[in-house]
Length: 512
Image 1 (tube, rainbow, N blue to C red):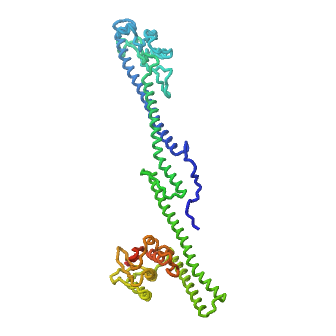
Image 2: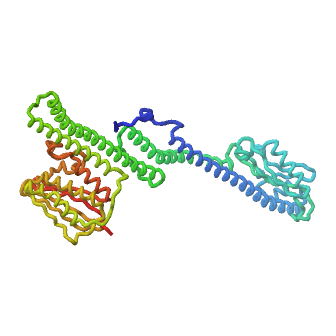
Image 3: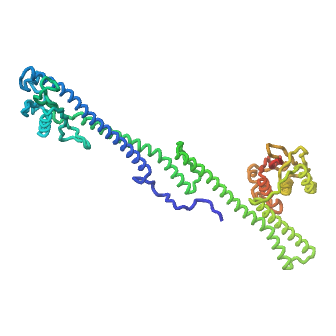
């Protein structure tokens, strides 16, 4: 027995949604954040390296230019004054008499430092002083010496953010490149206030703050982007879970046009198809139960009569020969009705079979209707109903199986005759359509109530529930008509007004 309801699945529908690091939203968000931070960190590192390297080069270039100019001035001053280097420095820079500039070192040819920065005006270390003195000695060999005094606190990766570049040059008589070396000078970059940040230190701080701010923004954007991606998936999961519980009307509202949006559209199409299929299965299940009930009812009545009459004959209850003959005649009639029901069921089964073979050929409908009406003419006369064939020679030829279509007309005319009172009329007409022929069977009978119209082609369905196999047929006639017409590739329908009559129509393909 087919049962349609809540499917049996292994889904844990009561389990809470996935959270924490296992959730897809968290994975997406962390992925966005890590990728973005990696990119920002790489850009920041490149920026720091570029700034530090270029700034050091800039400082060296500035110091070199200043040192060249100062060495030339000292050389010229030394020549004219014939004094020592300290006096020459004061002559070049009068303010040096009050306070040395704090960046200038002077060494004579005896390797005596004659001028150095004031110790209370700078953050000077013994290591820095030793480096500059060695550079002053090397400069007296006639070459420029560049270097940097290492810092003691701030570093970034392998960069010393507190390093102070210096330049040492020889001092020549007259400031000429060919003059005699009379000493050497050194210029250094130094902080006047110990503990104050240098330029590169400030740059690194700004970049690190930028990275921190960017990380916060990226984290928020990552969460929003992850939610935008995972929200439709969450809705899909919830809808699928409800569908697993038997709620087949679930749909997902997703407006995105990406892969997730297409997945949601495919899910909705699947849900609609599943809802239709389940609805059809439920309808078929109802029809099957109704079929079983109808078959049982239609079989039970004649079988009960046959059993009762047979037992009466066997028990000798009916002694009169005439009554015995009448009883046998009733039994024979009931057997004929049972045979008709079985034949109709068998015929309907063959008509609905996908392997049904049709002998299709061009068919003159007007001629076929005449022949069918001639067969039923005695019944029409017996009931006092007139029959009309409104088809003429201009009616298009149909492509159909003659025997099957004859059965269709017989069933429709017989059904119309059952519901048309004496004095009524039954007519058959046809009209041509695009590639089709529409045939109409009209009667002036009692008509069909609207609630019954949509079901009259169902098997065993009777608009008048009081009719039985003996009085109203098997209830399979119109179902057989529908199966035959659909096998031809046509359609069938009905229009009816209670008290005014009914029109059953069907279409057939035109003969080419």
